[in-house]
Every structure is written in structure tokens, then in C-alpha cells.
Image 1 (cartoon, rainbow, N blue to C red):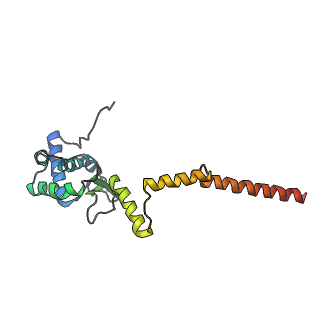
Image 2 (image 1 turned 135 degrees about the vertical axis):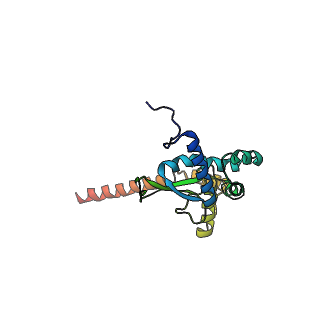
Image 3 (image 1 turned 60 degrees about the vertical axis):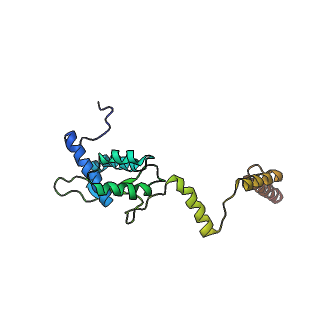
Amino acid sequence: MKKRIGFRKLGRKTSHKWAMLRNMVTSLIKHERIVTTVAKAKELRHLADHVVTLSKLECQLTGIRRADKIIWEKPVLTKLFQVLGPRYKQRQGGYTRVLKISKRRQGDGAEMAVMEYVDRPGELRAARPPRAAQKEIMEQYLQEKLGLQPLSPDDIRILEAEVDKLGLTNGIVAVDKEENTEQKSESSIDEASKK
């Protein structure tokens, strides 16, 4: 019975697996997109997200020291802290994407995948904006494209007071009910006159 297994062995000894993952995360940061097997990509995703989180730490010196134990090359470490860290400042996780490729590997037929960082130029599929920025983007779109201004809390209170003065409990729903009762009464009068 498999319980509490948090990672894949990938058919290697632990030292070999971690050396391979360190190589892959270094290549991923350097090129921002790599092609590998699906199992390796899913295992790499955790480590790749972790090093980006290290680049966003309050104390950058601590983050640099911890990331230096994972990443092999110094220029790649510099890119992590100067390019990727600021790029994902507002995003809270989910920095990578795994996309399966329909073409399998030639020798053993293993499923292949593209592993890439999101929000980068030339990405395969545009990423959803981070949750913190979604509201701002929507407000900006409404202002620019439709010319609508967002309602302030004072405007909302004024509108609610006007609705209460009119005696509408649910706004449009109450008006629809009144129209339906008028139509029913007119149709019943027509039916009675026909008889």
C-alpha cells in the first residue's frame, strides 16, 4: 500500500536524480523552455517553482545562498534574481506550465512535454493574470473599451437607498413578477370573454 510518497524516483538513485533535476532547473531558467518527459517535467515543476519563490524572499541574501545550492551556473543565478524574481512579484505560485506533446520519444515511446515559465515573451499559451491583478485589469478594460467607471462604495449605498424607496426587494425580479401577473390577469379576462 503506497502512502506518504511525495515524489517520483524516476528510475535513478537519489544522488543521480537530484543532479539531473539541478541540471534541468538550471537549463529551464537559462532558456525558459525545455522539452523533457512528462514524469520528469512534473517532478521538475516543484523545484522550478521553489527557486522562483526563493528569488522573491524579503532577505535576498538568504534567497541567493539557498538558490546557489540548487543552481549550477552563476549567470543563471543572476538571471533568476534580476529577471524572473521581479517578473513574478505579484504572482503567488504557479510560475511554470507543463504542456504535453503529441509526438512521443523515438526510442522508448515515452510521453514528452514542454516545460516553460509563464508570462514570458514567446510563450506557447498566454497565462491567466495573477489574482491580485485580475480586478485591476478588468477595471482598466471597462474604462478604456466601454467607457464605464467603477462604482464607489458611496455610489452603491445611494443606489441601494433608491431601490428601497421604490419598494423593490430584488430589483428586476420584482418588476418581472408584476408584469407576469398583469399578463395572466389579461389572458384570464380574454378567456372568460370567449366563453
